[in-house]
Length: 308
Image 1: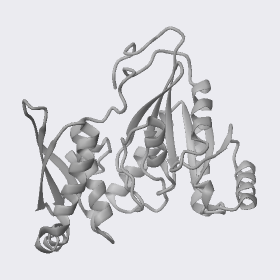
Image 2 (image 1 turned 180 degrees about the vertical axis):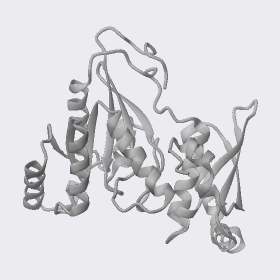
Image 3 (image 1 turned 90 degrees about the vertical axis):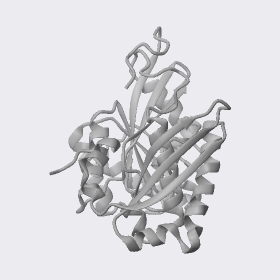
Image 4 (image 1 turned 120 degrees about the vertical axis):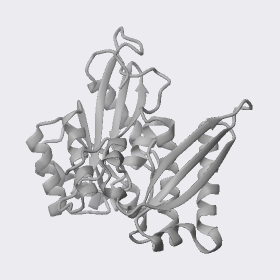
């Protein structure tokens, strides 16, 4: 984190805002909408976000440091899943404010949601509820769901939003800005994320792989940036390795005649050029590393704790 005093200090406010919720509730979409740029990957698959990604937004004199946490769910069995859930709860504990996102297509408070509310109650944090994807549900059902949540937990406020379309998001951000504690900004005013470009670029490639591949394979792969070379004309050459756990997975990732990996490279390169505002030469390699999920270095890169 940057040191204090990087932005205006007189009369300023700053808050760390944790975005929490079940997998696929729309946390990454809301983060990108709030920041006004893509800093967290978004797919239709659950548990896409592995690390706590920070995005930085300004609202008047307030700086809001949003933390997009991995989805919280019970019964996490694999080491990576357990580490992701632990990271999400740490994000809650470190925050000034918590926004609980709920996908209204889950139109009842199920056991998973009640367990999440119980975890928030234990931590005694300030929580607001954002009922997301309101364009997908009838108004009477929406109001009934809001009433059910209000009865189950002492939310400071309840907002109804569509993170994808932007409906209600400005109201949520404006309210959060008024609740931010007085103090100096944590980041320069032009900074959008605290993630290094190398990690953001690898996440873009991982997103394209998630969208291109199906079933369990996306969860069995990781992407690392091996080299980043800048040229005099402003363009950059980026080499990345996609690690999978088994040889058959490598064949799936590459695709027949290299079609899949070529499509992923083209899509990722186009997005990286828009993000970096320069020409990008992207090179992708797929390798088998059977036990990458047991490598403590991967967890350190994502800011996760490695359980021995």
